[in-house]
Length: 63
Image 1 (cartoon, one colour):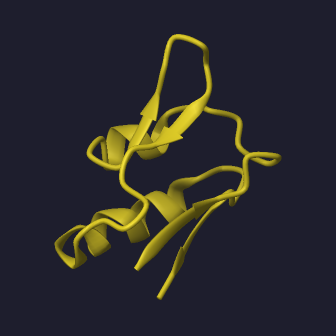
Image 2 (image 1 turned 90 degrees about the horizontal axis):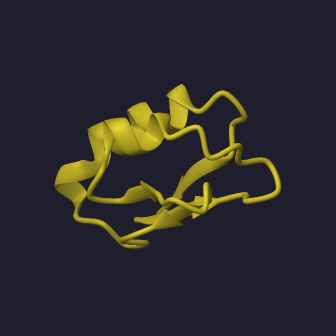
């Protein structure tokens, strides 16, 4: 699985970081960073929650 973010849509509101901080991080520069583009399968439920919770639909998972 690969985490893909459309940074043109992303507002860096950190909702995804609150759900999966091992994968997403919003830094002091107010930009979102992907810490692990290929996270373990064990994180899939939380990543699916992050995808559904993103207000701009900027996150997707690719198998």
